[in-house]
Image 1 (cartoon, one colour):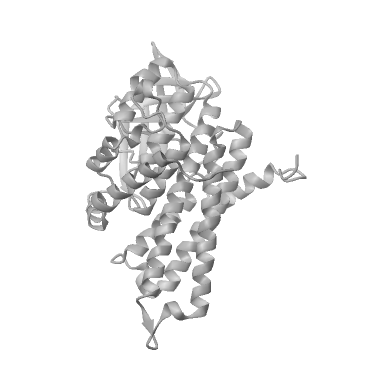
Image 2 (cartoon, one colour):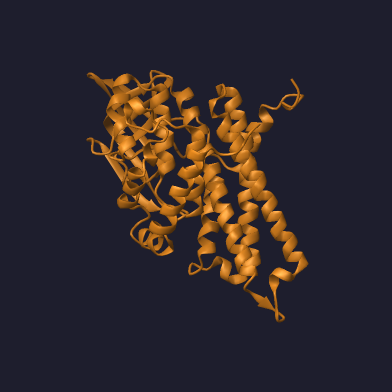
Length: 371
């Protein structure tokens, strides 16, 4: 199988890498973090590059590309630890495109593609603990539409988003709805997250909503799987840059009059970091390529990938801190911010132990190796 990127994919990667290098450097990121962890101007710049419409077909104003192009983009954004949640545009647009009515598609996909609207998934509730089938939010019929009562937690850029994709129970069945932030009965409480981006708690009090689909569990599973694939790609980019920073530091730092890069024991640890990075990269490719598989197969593949990525991100981040010494955990040094970013990614969309349980629960006698 050929895993080489096409010329168009390489050009896309280079364009995003140049934007991160020139327009999202360390100083700009610090300013965005100080201002709250989200910058509409930066998100608009991503939209101007066409990145918000990668997963949207051309009929609705998108580029009509696929998961591989999204992965290429997110690796570069992970390398720059970009705060703005472009991955959420990929998640919500994929779900709306796959499960939404024509009315919902025509209303929202062009807005997402152009960057006019930031639409994020608001699915997390405290009792759920990563389970998609646990939902306390309620939806009732209200005239020609619906009304939602819900409390959702850790919604990415929730107090900055323009609309939310919200799962809620409708007549005993999980359904998916779209709620505008400007609607009556919508309240948000924003706060910074550990990776220095932004999230919010979302409270809906009989908020008007538009139905996306009554097959909410299948749609939410797709959203979760796309989110995991996005997280894997972001993690690979962040680990790649973390390793680069670590090697550069070891080639500058001297102890006993010699560069610490010359110490064999430390070189072995760097080799282990590289091995974990490449294992993660392979599983990220695997996760992306499995997004088109049947739901059960796709879910298991994404859980396997998240287990490896979780292990790799934790290992690379911790080894980087150890090899840097005390400077590795100071806010003044960029490496500590990569460590926090990787730590939060490991917990996103289900932590390593959760997905290890998912893999174990569905493992057969052949473990999927033989047909």
